[in-house]
Image 1 (cartoon, helix red, strand yellow):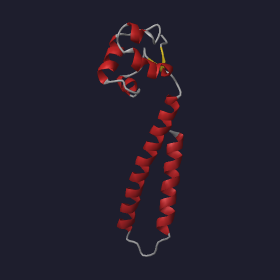
Image 2 (cartoon, rainbow, N blue to C red):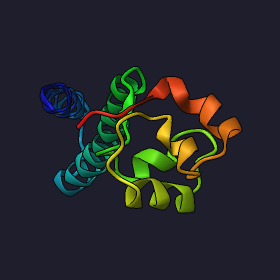
Image 3 (cartoon, rainbow, N blue to C red):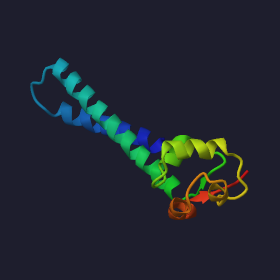
Image 4 (cartoon, rainbow, N blue to C red):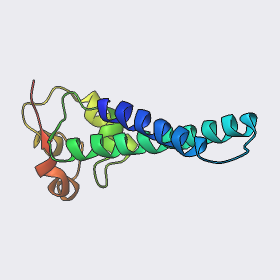
Length: 120
């Protein structure tokens, strides 16, 4: 969050500085250009923040006892229906129970087993 705020302030300051250097520009045009540039920076900053969040969570195992449907479906090969079954079958003592309870087939579980944990 702090990065995004600092980045936005820096970018707006840079845009204002560059805009002030251009001769004979209509104030309304300047406002519109600044607004467009700010909107683009906002979108870019959100994309950067989303990428950072994804990178942080990629290295951490996903707790099957508290994971959301979206987090479960982000795992390779896990469908929405399987994610719903994982949620309905909670709690788990061990991620391997996804196979023993027939929520996921062994082949699919083997692909994601290293990315799962079951903490209560």
